[in-house]
Image (cartoon, rainbow, N blue to C red):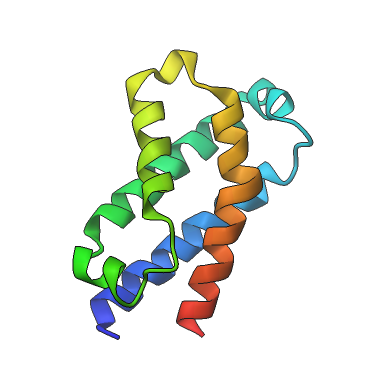
Length: 112
């Protein structure tokens, strides 16, 4: 694997883990939204995850990294970008409770 790609994947894994660590402190999306610092950090990290994803070459996504659902990352970023102040909280909760754990697992498998 190309060293640059490997570094991007490690960075992506790191941000994903930090996001999950913050989100795991809350039982519901409403509780997360009440803690403005945690909420803002999770939103910012989802944006960072998207920015890292954009740096990964399309060829690598289709070949070496084809087990990752890259469309989910774009979906979350577009939702945040389109209506930051009226964000679909359920979509955010799906990201942190379901999709990011899967991303973390797949990245760990790829990088091991």
